[in-house]
Length: 489
Ligand SMILES: [Zn+2]
Image 1: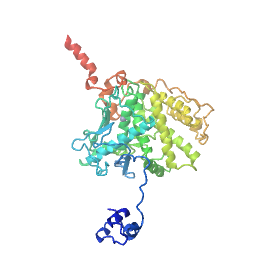
Image 2: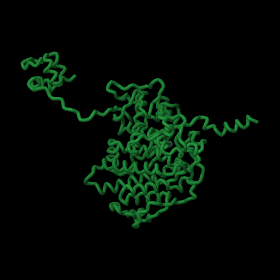
Image 3: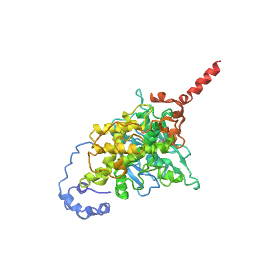
Image 4: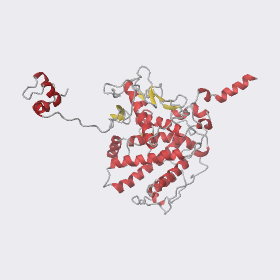
């Protein structure tokens, strides 16, 4: 306990010559014990200083900044600046874990628990979902983004299940209005080495990304879309994890120091779901955003197709960061610059997706919206050169401006007006209309659990695009109709 000078004065009855009782001495902070007691009685009581604005509400949460295998970043407290009820729960998100929820805040009003306990897992999963929603709400002008079922005044929350079931997976389900994180024992490990997917920031933000995108573009999850639309969903999840990491100063700084500000250096940032990937025998994470895949190399397999889009956006991020670093080296800190560049690119991608078609969206549609929005918001022309180049070299779009400077490493990286050939084109064509990624059936066999849910495989895209809740009967609709006809004969 700390005794303040004013308290000493009161306790002493205001008498200057009174000794501080020996019983109180031991309870005082050392500096105060030495000088403060005498000074305190001489000084008039401090006037209270008015606080100009009400203090912000909010809570501390303890989270893994990447996952338990990325020990450099480890477990750290984060501040969630909104009201969170015991659960944890707020107006958009609630948590459910039998035997643990509702998890109560501690005496300080915080959700800080011993790592890897059920209470910690609930708090961790809630905090990462909340941070992901908050990031996109910032890009949405501060307005809430409806979940797919939030229509006609419906305000139902999404429910987060940190220990949903046993299995090596995680998923978002519109029918269940839920994010479910599974757990499993990796092959060859003792039964006590259980891997909980809810402890990965990448996995939790990836699945939350699916729920955000299903709210923005409810027609995109249906398997009846071309494979590239499925790829956009998977890619949005992965990019969400990268942009969430880069919205956090400690992660951005750790990354800048680790890689010497080189986005193409090996690091935790482009590697997604490291612990989960390792358990499956993939040392560089489940997926890697810093890849060189082209559309002609991926067929109709949606998980691979997604990496082509993710890789293109990641390359644009690296290009813009390089350009801005050269331009602002002496005026901006490298970490702050990275946070700003990533924030701007995330906003551009968000706006481009909002502006893209309601169903059947292709990569070229999103790329064109990125070009047009970038021009209308006044980005330097070289930003659009980066976007055109990176989508063209991946065989997503035609090369409206020659790629020879890019391929020969002779880009004028410090020239804000650089376009390659003087043309600041904002409308490009698909590289190959006949690509399997645009025409074939979607092969979702290697995707995350979300893409394998029957509700998105069976319910047609027009029905999904209408928004609203889904029932199990919607999944069985065709079969039930058929039975009804058969049983009516
Ligand atoms: Zn996914």
